[in-house]
Image (tube, rainbow, N blue to C red):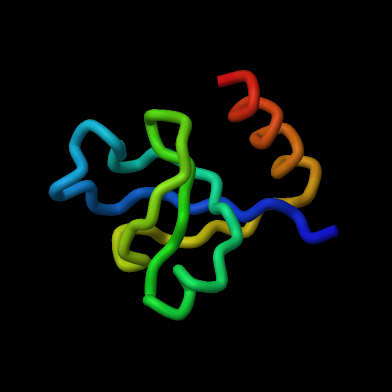
Length: 76
């Protein structure tokens, strides 16, 4: 199984209540979002939504870190 992916928000213009600049967000795999040049991320509401890929920078984290971050997000 592939490790969860994470991104850091670089720009929250238009989404001030949903995203925080500098915060990590978990990416939800979505082939349709990829085709449209976006990402589906779990935002501040705890729900996954489509956002422009340019608003984020991808992060490479070791699997152990990804597992810890995933468990934190699930606890909400």
